[in-house]
Image 1 (spheres, rainbow, N blue to C red):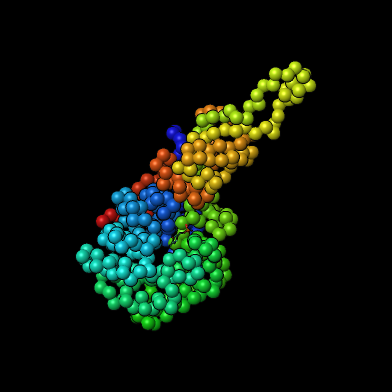
Image 2: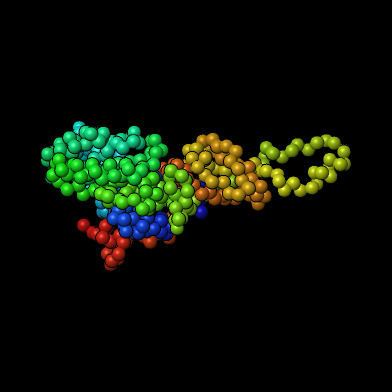
Length: 373
Ligand SMILES: *Cc1c(COP(=O)(O)O)cnc(C)c1O
């Protein structure tokens, strides 16, 4: 098998998705699975749908197109505010998009009218993360303009937390979002179908005892892929943390740490050198670097430390004497390491436990999303 490679265990992704879907179902919340860290990889998206996700969400149109080209027919929502220049393509390949700018919504509406369709709009509300969002006091006004605009339909509202600011959502903020959904229905009329409370950082709130109110959707990426709470980095009970493994090959061992032989006849020194030094750290170099992943996001195996990385080299110190030129090393990864590796042209993706595309006789899981058209 060639390296460097990313081994992706789809069974673990199905399991992680199913665990979150089942825990949230009893709280009245659906899971929209976020594929952006996997660059819209069709088999990873399929594993999320097999695990019970209600639909998919992506940040980039290029990734949505990749999913569509692979035959994905499930609903896909664009969760990054669309670029004005991409309005036509957004309407063509996405069922809905998250929006904050009325000029963009107008362009989506015009594109939808041209394509004789209706594009669903979810309005993103700013609730403290200070990234994208409409200020709560302006939401009613924007919502009314969307409702009055032919070509688009107001599908819901959403909020996002812990991305730019790192601040996790609170029960109080979730109550405010619920109240905003009720207010908008009062002001504009239509039923607000989706109230999307946030991302993986919302899970501690969602698994907790607080009332979920109107929140009926969460957009989950990191927790499905890596089994962790992104705010604390803690493992979520019953989930796999190692669905992704990076494998890299050793290309040099120990060249710099070999002590130059001392031309010295002192036999006490010679004797000392004959005692094997089990604490000795060997420097080795692997054929992987910043261009392939986030080196700081790799977890080093026991007895191994990261010395440094450059664009194409990873230098580590290890006590493992069996590592030789040609040996492979395996690393668990954090979110930024996975995200970079998935996007890196030189990293091959190897799927484990791939069930392949669903067939028409499948009655559960993906068939309801991937029905032939
Ligand atoms: C990336 C993103 C998500 C998913 O976040 P995770 O932490 O991976 O669960 C959800 N919503 C928006 C708007 C995002 O940009």
